[in-house]
Amino acid sequence: MTGRPLQDRRDTPRDARLAAFAAPAMPMAVTNLSLAVYLPQFYATQSGIGLAVIGFVFMAVRLADLVFDPLLGIAIDRTSTSIGRFRPWMLAGIPVAMIGSWLAFFPPQEVGVAYLVGALSGVFVGYSLITVTQFSWAAVLGEDSNARSRAYGAIQGAATLGMLLIMALLPLVAAYLPGGKDLTVPAIGLFIIITTPLTVMVATTRVAEPQRAALAHVPSFGRAVLDYGKALACPPVARVMASTVFTALASGVTSALFLFFAPLKGFTAAQANLLLLIYFVGAFASSRAWAPTAFRFGKEKVLIAICLTVAAVKLTVLALPNGAFYWASAGQVVLGACYSGTMIMLKSIVGDAADYAKQRLDEDFTGRLYAVYSSLTKASIAVSVGVIFFVLQAIGYAPKAGSSNSPEALQNLELSFVLIPAALFVAGALAIARYGRTSHPDPAASVRREVQP
Image (cartoon, rainbow, N blue to C red; front, top):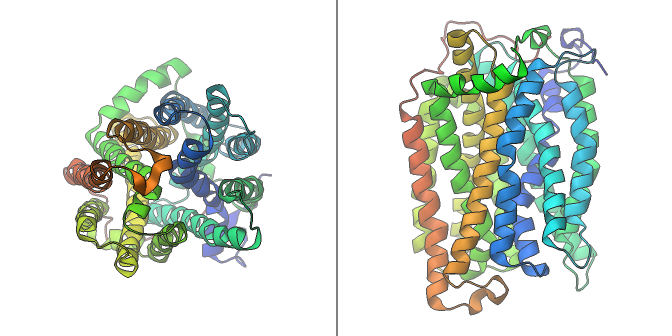
């Protein structure tokens, strides 16, 4: 389980080693997609739980990550075992994620609030164990900012590939397993349960931890908790976390409303799924282009351009004619590419901010800051789902009624889908605009290998 030193594996291409390391992002991305898009809509239409209650449960359970993830980050930074600093936590995520997914995606006929809370808790804890560990591990795989961008580019590429695979499999499930029951959610759950152990084992056995990964010095547990305040007070850290919150809120609102909004524009369920597939095609196709783009122009400038582009494209939706599938597809390609760029830039800038905090405070905050990033992302998406479901109920929108809702409710749904995310992405651009620390590396500096022991 200790892995073989990567420099001894000269027969293995560098990209293949990065792909092995990034593999767990595939099932975790599908998990995140389902939590944002499919599961809320599934429980809203298939269970007897009220819409506002479902939104509150998704929000409350995920807000618990604001406590769990930072504590996990401290534990990662303090870990030193015979199999490494990161492997134990990623391996621990396998059974938790599998059990939680089984409960959440294969619920019994009658589901109560307590069951939903327990199932989602298992999913969220397993997701945190794997993703927080992977983000923290990736930060020490490369020795410079450009290498870090490539590492997170590989993770984002794997995440997008996972979402592409599930979006391609769902039509096959509908075609070859006909019947009165919608099998979308069980199919997603089965994908997660099968691929999670496989991809985590690939990552933990094929990639060796760098020796410097074990050198993190973290004070006592109580002191480490208090030190979060010092790290978050650093301007670069505060700004990247603020941008993370705004963009995650925007993504959460879009995801939660998409399956409600698509029929409003005259798209069938099959077309809505195809639009999601096109979105992820755009994300996957662009994932390898963002690292060199950031190297040339600087991560903060690229992130600002992405946020403003998303806001502009969102506003064009108001002028989109009903049933204009090809125009919608073009917009999805652009938004998918922007989604990929946002994730890569933010993760990489968090690593740069961790370097800044370490230089200023003489303490390694890598694991803890990625835990904060992860918890803020998940909590923001959860808050957006919870709040937007309350908003839908307040404007009189009924999910089971679909397009039979009142014209006022449908108009408010459209405005919520467009204006709220657009405003939040502009706020994300403003937050990072005065980041205060360049992430553009010295062109004369040697670019080290991004994966080494």
